[in-house]
Image 1 (cartoon, rainbow, N blue to C red):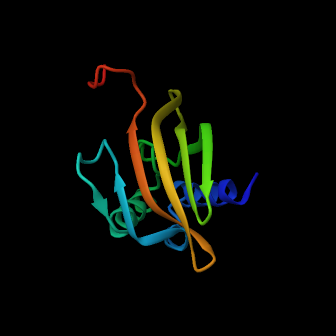
Image 2: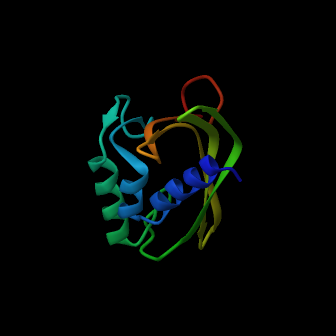
Image 3: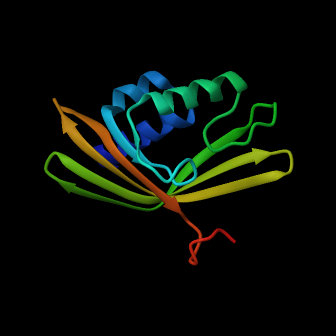
Length: 142
């Protein structure tokens, strides 16, 4: 695994584990992102995810898992991961698969992501994220 993939997996694991400290360490304060299921508009900065992660930690769940009142096991996989590096800038594109073990069985949610990372003062930081649905056209979920 190269340094960018190691960094990316650490960053994503921080989100999965509601680890706000590591999320801040791996994300630029001027982050911009598009999360299609939240709003059709750009979201700026870190407070949005900090609030989400703290709320998830309080209710005992993690990103991508339904609140069931019980602790659930989750994992993420990066399908079709491609990393393009251009000096101190890198772009990772992949389909994020989030698997959740529930009493009814394992459920898998998927969406496509691109994350732009820049090396700032010797450390990689995520500066932009774009997510899109992983279901086929037409552009309305079946």
